Amino acid sequence: MAHLHKRFKDSQVKALLEKYGKGEIEGKYIEQILGIKRRRFCELVKKYKEDPDTFTIKYKRILRW
Image (cartoon, rainbow, N blue to C red; front, top):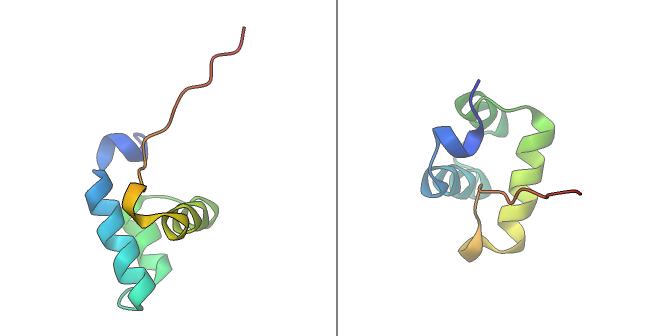
């Protein structure tokens, strides 16, 4: 399965996490929609709660020489 950032936009994931925060949708359904496991879901929720305005699912590649 493709990476999360290639299948969804930040705004789509953010909308799902907003609904989760309001109690409108359960975490297990978001996991199924996004195709992720519980651990990754929890990481996304934590990251979103820390700063919803700058939340992104993009990542920076770390180069090691």
